[in-house]
Image 1 (cartoon, rainbow, N blue to C red):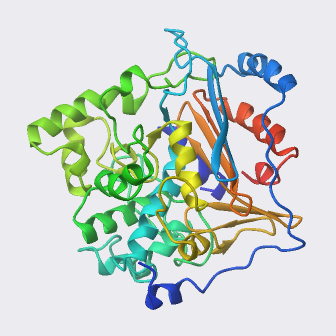
Image 2 (image 1 turned 180 degrees about the horizontal axis):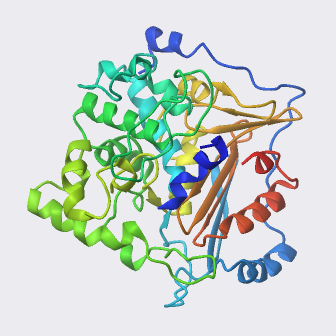
Length: 406
């Protein structure tokens, strides 16, 4: 499978001297005279055209938020969260954001690095019992750095029963997008801390930052707030996470263990009861650091603000954030990968970004730490990229090169 197909496969369904030394092996980005990312609120002319664009693209709902000078300065909501009920998108609407889950998890991991609980360059096999891939010694060298910089060599996801994990290259050799790599790191973090992913996210991110609407699994009340997924024709589509929410809650009650505390072993055990049509692979698990985050644009803005060193709480110190946003793997002269984020270097302008894709929704975030600015766009349609691309171009005032690569 090519790297490009790999990137889209998911759409088918404390820093002490020891740890800081491990972060020094980075790949420099393309540099030049520093030019900052400039974001502007959407013009009235564009806002007038946006509902027409959404109708043409069959995208029912959109939510947009700006971060400027380290604060959420502008937000707007368009269309409906469900084409059947016609309920409007509001500030309270929650969205599945797909791979925008990964940067949030990366910050949780960096918090554990800062606390000295995980060494980013120690093989994850040293933290986890058993072998990840039988008779594949290279897999034993996968580290947290490899997982967060998308250089593990693992495939993106497994979907079919009997499909095994495989390694395409030695970890760290080059870039290749892998949700399996992120989930492997999730397993290691759970093993190290003894806590489930949701517990860790609440302790280190959602609680301190006031992200009350955010969760890596389905919360009670989401059914009244969720932006439903819509297919390419703009019709409400069956959604795996929404469909199985009640089943997951029932299994949790039977196990007498809340989903917030579930670790890999719990999810693997519960899979047959939750959805026996699919094999017990991370692709189908309800709590997955690579792709199950549900949030609002305002909550995600709080996360961006914390990343930029502002807001009500500081999750990481400045040195840790700087290391997190350093390029680790060069993809080409314009695009590289940091720890949890893609980076774009264009004519001296450097910004971080990430996209999210589910079967029937599309999301995107771009930001610049030097200006403490960012743009968040969530959509609830399979054709949502057509909308978020136009919003990004309008807000930044230029056609961003990363859009040609992505």
